[in-house]
Length: 101
Image 1: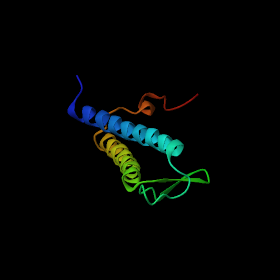
Image 2 (image 1 turned 45 degrees about the vertical axis):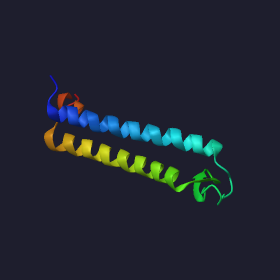
Image 3 (image 1 turned 30 degrees about the horizontal axis):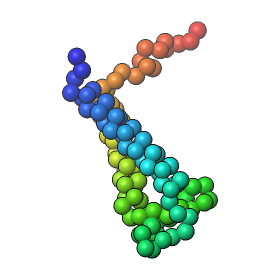
Image 4 (image 1 turned 180 degrees about the horizontal axis):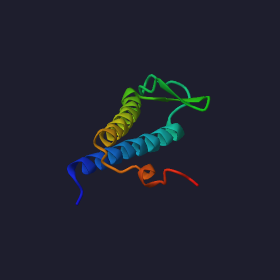
């Protein structure tokens, strides 16, 4: 049976992966469909770079990408801290032989 700490760590990793996937999918969609020059009529004035070619998005689209990246980092760091502090998952190095001769 999984303990609360394991469930919490697994949930944080899942949230981090989901946020990263949402960021990637939305970024690639925006890279294909957004204009390559700013459009003040539609509010697409925030520049994002795709390997030296720029595309412009709205403030909400840029905020979504930024929030997803922040959630990814925070979730992964929290899961790592939980694992480091409580030793939720055993290290594979613990079972390794101490001497290799």
